Image (cartoon, rainbow, N blue to C red):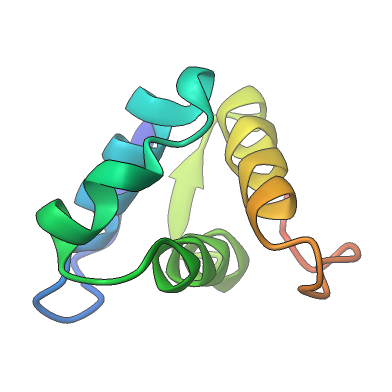
Length: 89
């Protein structure tokens, strides 16, 4: 399901942690109230980082998982340009 390469997004949470959190809380509208205490960043920053992870192509995810996470980002960042930028790899 998840096979991120060895890179992270600073001390506020690596790829694996961000994806794991997003997947765990996606059914509950994202768990925004827990993002700041756990990652030390605002929910908007968290979802921008998640979107960047999904776009960068370095993280292998099942298609269904990628769709769930992309949908979460689109819901949380309605003004962000997504288009077809998120790979289906």
